[in-house]
Amino acid sequence: MNVRRIFDSESGIHLTLIDPDEQTPARAGEIAVEAMSGGSDGIMVGGSTVSGQSIVDETVKEVKEKVDLPVILFPQDTSGLTGRADAVFFMSLLNSREPMYITGMQMRGAPIIKKLGLEPLPMAYLVIEPGGTVGYISDSRPIPREKPEIAASYALAGEYMGMDFIYLEAGSGVTEHVPLDMIGAVAKTTNSNIIVGGGIRTPKQAKKVVEAGADIVVTGSLVEEIDDVEQTISKLTDAIHK
Ligand SMILES: CC(C)=CCC/C(C)=C/CC/C(C)=C/CC/C(C)=C/COP(=O)(O)OP(=O)(O)O
Ligand SMILES: O=P(O)(O)OC[C@@H](O)CO
Ligand SMILES: [Mg+2]
Image 1 (tube, rainbow, N blue to C red):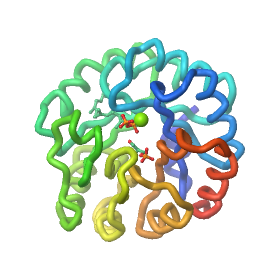
Image 2 (image 1 turned 45 degrees about the horizontal axis):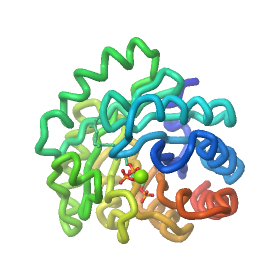
Image 3 (image 1 turned 120 degrees about the horizontal axis):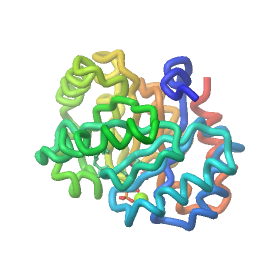
Image 4 (image 1 turned 135 degrees about the horizontal axis):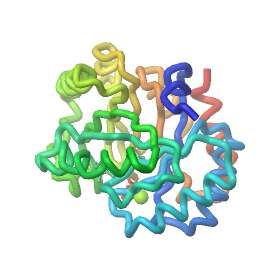
């Protein structure tokens, strides 16, 4: 499976983020099945505070057994890696103050990723205000919401460094997603694929985020909070699929 090719050829993509710490691997498998029926294009697995490699491994195993969607790891460190997935967001958190999140984890993770045979998807990860748990944990300096030009400059820097994906992250579960004018400024500036996540919960929000210029929309918390995953994801993907 060549994950990058799928993303390059489509727009209005939806990814469902599963946090391995939030449910059992069996439930994660069920969520993946419903997300696929609801039209989600892929499953991301990761969390900013994952409690060990085995839970990641078991979660991905369960998901891969149940669905035929690309599974992309979203690792907080090397314990978020397992060869059972298809690909990994090989990310550098460009606005972190902690070198470990800019190049350190990448140095440690690269040989493991090679050995596991995972497809690396080079990504600039940018934390936008408020930034949530991930902003705190990664010691980021979240980009001010009213400064779209700073996000655009970081995105272009990421593109020039060879990153095919730019992830604008407001933080998991926040009340306000990344501002639309910031997404627009980034879209105007970079040719890389733009991923937007954090605080997106309604079809209307997802649609506006895509109209503003996002190529890929991520929702995570949503599936942790509801029972009718299929119906909820289905409304969301209907709103963004072209
Ligand atoms: C390349 C390798 C091996 C690692 C990259 C390491 C980096 C740069 C990590 C960035 C910072 C970080 C802690 C990312 C974790 C992934 C993430 C943001 C998950 C979001 O998880 P949620 O589960 O939605 O959030 P909560 O933890 O708040 O529930
Ligand atoms: O949990 P939500 O708010 O959907 O955020 C998803 C993702 O951007 C978090 O890394
Ligand atoms: Mg979580």
